[in-house]
Image (cartoon, rainbow, N blue to C red; front, side):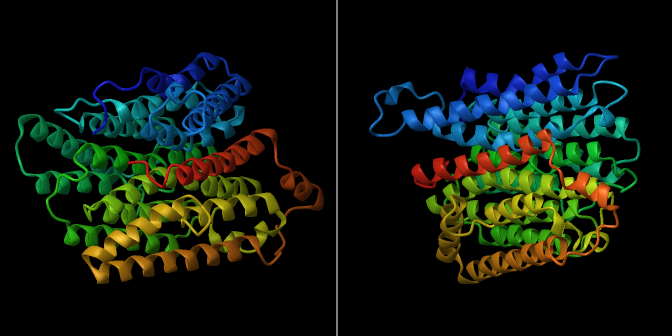
Length: 446
């Protein structure tokens, strides 16, 4: 159960990005000040996390000096994945007002709900989160008219209603644990970025695509972490194999979405959905291994999504095309983007020697205990994910096809700017730090 009174320092760190609004007053723009605020927030949080991890070591001189609990330590790292796209916002993306600042304010408001609950109504934080996402979609649709389909707002509203219902029945003590679990899982699945359509593809602005990634690709797994942890890890007397199978099926639909997607950013949506579905299936085993592995994986997915998604976003902005067909082989010249995409995507698959492997192995073990067929399906999903990522990596970043740019433009395109170095480098550092913390903490964030 999430503590009734959240750590004030943790909540202060979550809300720190709101200071970015001070650097983007109406009628003026200061992109460097905005970026410095976000970068400073990320660095401060990483220092606090590293310091907490060091102080928690058995040989530490001050074990009692730790700043965060184990949950907050891992959660704070995962939150940073949603901030990285804002490091790439510049004056061209925001020439008529404080758009990124307001959007980031909405993101900070949504994240505030992650640790805001009371024991009698633990889903209250999820209501804030889903409401914040709905307001974020409304804000982005005003900034970029026609960006989202009407069905997407309906999905968000339905998820908000389900979480509100969940809060009500928890507070009144109505419904059984099984019914509450079904409501919680349905709400999380409605918030996932795939396989249901979300964007209308009428807007292809880099600023919109990056902010959309921050809100609706990185945040849904964190909603799943909060809701499914708060609404009763271990409250079911028996596992839910049918519901776990449904979540695995949803994950396979995400893989299919990524496989058939025309646009590069949709690959990150499909992979995030597949990973979240796999994690939900593990949590629904109602075993200690499954719960711990699932909660850790839900925290890892936003970080991997941010790094791989940003790599694709930077490739698209350089060559000014978004489809896989048009980009085939043209990314071979961008070695740094290929490396960052490779690290993010394959880390998300939790290969051996990375921290997420412990979580993935725990989920597979839990699934095998309740159903041999579910375990086989999960292993097949991991294999298909590996093939999909390898295929897309080969398609985009190998082959050396001409980019269509002149030699001078190609040299300019190959240069990585300072904000891009910050975002990619920080994404890699966050994943490495997450690996270290998760590994030395025994593979559990639960």
